[in-house]
Amino acid sequence: MILTIVDEIGVRMLIDELLSHTKAENPELRKSAVKLLAIFCIHTKADLEPYIAQLIRGLIQLMTENDPEMLLLVADAVTAVVKVCPYYICTSGFRSNFTIEFEF
Image (cartoon, rainbow, N blue to C red):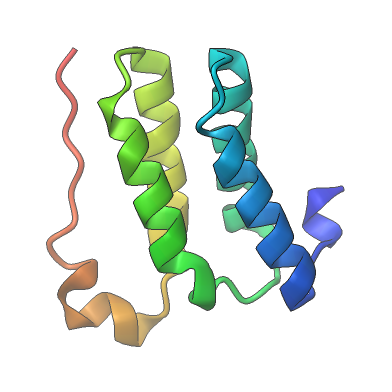
């Protein structure tokens, strides 16, 4: 259902709503929001360029979690966002040195 959202207002509302749920008290709600963000970024036909910085910022903040499952979900979501990053942004240094390492 979320993949049918392609207009600018709908995309903005969806991203804002999902990012707000990543700050919820309930860990399952946070995980679900991150999963949905990753799925949306991977499969949408909408233009995500205006939201890349917001998405990266919101997801990076979740890297302080202690739950290994959540950290993997965040890494998957960040990867999904970076993969849709336009070439000219990614080649300006934003993506070329971007790596995520986790220790459990």
